[in-house]
Image 1 (cartoon, rainbow, N blue to C red):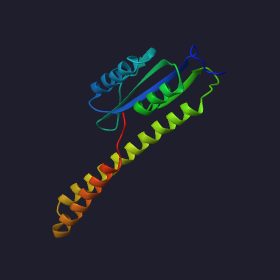
Image 2: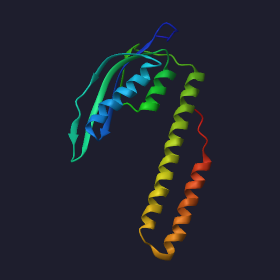
Image 3: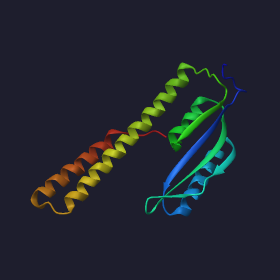
Image 4: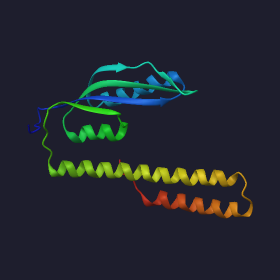
Length: 161
């Protein structure tokens, strides 16, 4: 089936969160779904009760169905909210133009690069914090190197929103 303007993509999405305090999980999940509702049709929301995972952590999820007018919209939700599961309910086949596929790939690449940059920045900060615990004369030198690495990583990317 070729996806036309009147044909929507219907999906079932699961978004899971882990964290604490327990009360914050479903509040955060509701905020996520409310944000998605501002742009797209969402229905059949079902929130789980938070379950204890380990000593302090809790896990909860929301399951909902939504409609999107095209794959670009669906991919925007996937990239921004990282659902655990996305099940395509309708249609069973979808046509995508080269231009739309190119846009989706560019958005995906941008998101991956931003995540990579953030990991490198956090790694440099962790390295600095470990050094600050007491490494003597070498600590200052290594700390400056970590700061330089962080500056380099920050300046490499400009994220377009």
